Image (cartoon, rainbow, N blue to C red; front, side, top):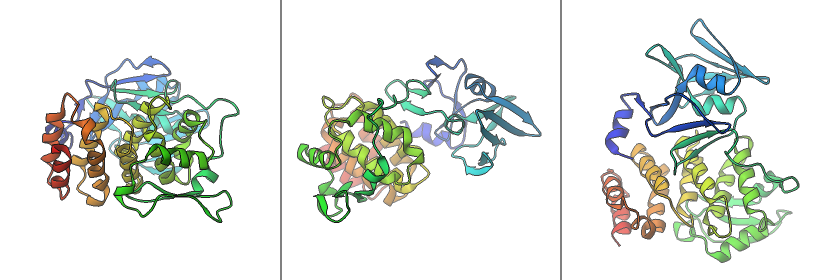
Length: 335
């Protein structure tokens, strides 16, 4: 979360000393590198761990596994997955005679689930990411997400009935004053969607299937509702927050990054790693529309943030950001 480190990351590539990578429960025996806020790992180490075939010739990396083909070139921000061009958050790089590839991209392109566990500074691939829903507990997500009306400040504003002819749940205008969810709000939204007894299974399904969902903003808003549920009612809260942090930091859609931040803001609890990530996000973006929910985060979570052992550092780094939201955030934190 250190601002000086974030500044240097724009200029340098540094070892990710505190980051551990596990693949199907086994720790990757290599040192990750952090560049531009993204984790890169040695090409051969990760592809061997994923049991992928790799060919490296003419400065082109080609990896194949179970019908999936990924093609990258060092220092190129474009890759190909099964012949289709994809824009990368971080390109592959040649450093010290070793080729490093962006971990999340290559893993997901080869069909692996990926999660960031902020509490342990661990990137988890495959087993241990998010358990699949139990047989018979899966729900059809798209019809559910179609029923949600989502705002930019207020999260889930309305829920249509199953025929989309009338409103079953209504919260009000898209205003930050309506964003925090009461227990009654949670029960009404989840009850209307018939999800009350399936919170863990639905949350895992939303996270596991997120990349293929046509309504990702609505999926993030629903995860925000689930994130607001107290921990004694849901067992996947920490997984949800790790997933939302990842979407906030790396989702290619500014709308989704914004919605993920709001979903974190309405949470029933916060971990230090979540607060650190929100501060990093705030420091790293000069888009006021994108970072608007950051002030909501500190408005709703100020009391919890003040109890953290690194509160003074959080406060100082947050208030050092030159933003129109600085005075509001200062008022929330100092209250």
